Image (cartoon, rainbow, N blue to C red):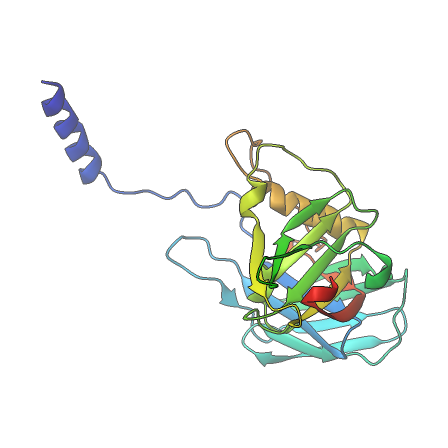
Length: 268
């Protein structure tokens, strides 16, 4: 009798149509990228968010994108669908505001971020550890998140088969690691699974990029990770994560100072 009931229940479930509740908040555009001090090229990605699991974000085409660094306007041009490129040869405006203005579909969106000067890599702790193996090889371990730092930062560490950092490639975010000013939000999330490990020769090169984060950008990322990396059984109810873009838009326009250093694995 119990088996018959289970089979009938299963048949009912199979016959039901799957339903999808669309997002309560429907954003008009989403933004990634911003201004960096490493290279003259600056990249901003604009998309129309997908509203159904069977759809993909669409590139925002033919938008007007301008950044004012407090001295002059930097004009961005669309180089590929949804990717806007600008060239900045001005000196960094440390502790100054950079203002982004986007005009799209007869609407205006603005965002502001502040450029904080990065602390040199040699004057700070590295968010990684190394161990010399019995055969002389080096085991490199890089946690995705480290807490309790004096200043928040985002890092890109590449070696071996990790690709060189390309600021115009927005798919490389999976290689970022973060040092947070705030503490661990929940001791139950799986820290051990959020790290990279690699075995290499002690002479193998490792290149480290360190990005400064403004206080508001750090809080935005912390909120994102509460809904992604640190989401679990005991997490709170998901909330809308507010970026720094005005209007019905999502994402964060960031301004970052960058330091770069190259090491051998045996020197870390």
